[in-house]
Image 1 (cartoon, rainbow, N blue to C red):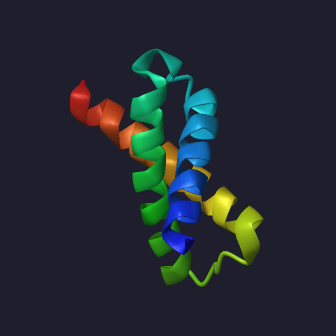
Image 2: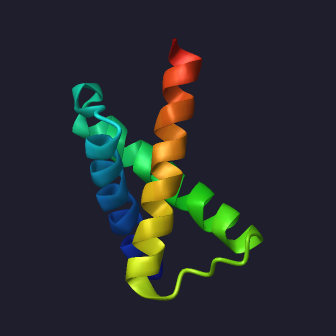
Image 3: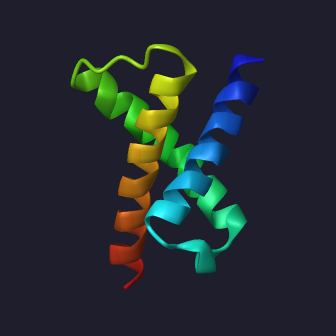
Amino acid sequence: MHLIIEILLGALAGSIAGKIMESSKKGFLVNMILGILGGFVGGRIGGLLGLGANGWLGGLVLSVAGACLIIFLFRKLKG
């Protein structure tokens, strides 16, 4: 159940990050996948920096930040 919630939170984060980074033309599915990856990255970086995700709101903030980073890197690699 926890994994399903994390995936849904990552998908929501990808949608939010897509709006922030203005990448809606990439498609909702791509933003969701990047959001799930961003949630993983944001959680790991937040953990390394001592920014524990307290509750779902903290997790969402870290996931959105990670998703924005992933979208930025995706754009740079794609050209």
